[in-house]
Image (cartoon, rainbow, N blue to C red; front, side, top):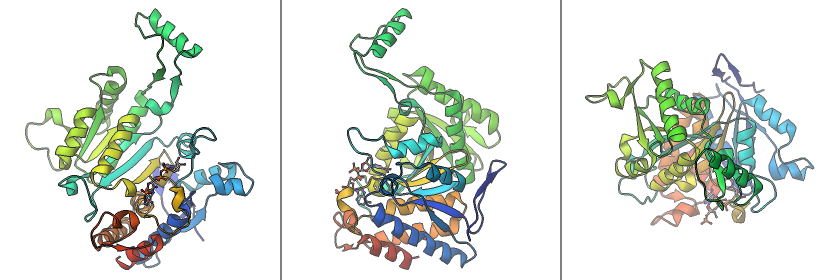
Length: 398
Ligand code: NAP
């Protein structure tokens, strides 16, 4: 019998037999989710010899829910996600052009999952476009609820757009009358909480620096304020644990986290030219969106990149790719994105031994060139495996 995970005094309490939710996902969710769960169970068993075990509970949403006559996000599923605290999910379909809005975005908004956490590192053997992909090892904390994600836009020529143009005109600023309008809110509370999450993570995981990425030279009261609020909060809450780049005369002391900031365009360039100087990155939604994918592409890992959406007392770990519908049920696609999201989840639970077993075994499996079609087609002399065979190979390599 599993036990519920609890959250008290700002701390997660993870029992040895926690009930963890899983959302199978649409499309290739049927292929990757059972494989990933098998890998997690094998790692936990190997690491803890029966002392710890995950009790999985399926949460029904999306197409599976509709099939049983329910709505896309049934109320009982949502309340169970909340109760369980930690859930891992496969991809969910969003029909293009109309239909319902993205369930992924809905889940983030319903549960105020303000941290989008995307670790990016190189796995030896994966074909990468840069010369030294092994130098990339960053964790990007992207704000998940504000900025362009707040989604406030008015169509060109619409009455609302015209009203806003008139209002801004009355304040002495001119906007071309045929403009569409997009609003980019960045709040002090929203900025401070994502930056705090990044600094806490850096301290907990012994990382060496936190870089705030912004375009504050142009957008002073949104992106510039993000940096200013971040620095203010860090100075107040982490004074003894950090050192600011601006105050440094020499190398940063080893026992302190280096805090610095970079203008977004310079950051893209730096991540390509001197990736080993960056570690944990905190940024707003749109910068984070671009930066996560650019960093993942740099190490050849777009298809296997993991992700997590984390709120105050709720975390959803997820494959970052979509449902790849043409491959549904073919036991073909690469389950690594979901498996590595599970590694993030195990690290979040402080089950580090199990997490490390999976990472090392995945690394070995890729180095041995025993891989799924997406990697096999880019490697020479690789052995093509099915999705399930790839999972079994990881387990064998633990
Ligand atoms: P996609 O499902 O990610 O698939 C695009 C292509 O990426 C696939 O055809 C395949 O490329 C490759 N790919 C994706 N997952 C893979 C895997 N596990 N292993 C190997 N290759 C993989 O993107 P999409 O076709 O744009 O989106 C399909 C649906 O997914 C949409 O409804 C979209 O809204 C949804 N979606 C959901 C999420 C989420 O739940 N987080 C994220 C993105 C999209 P090749 O054919 O070249 O091999």
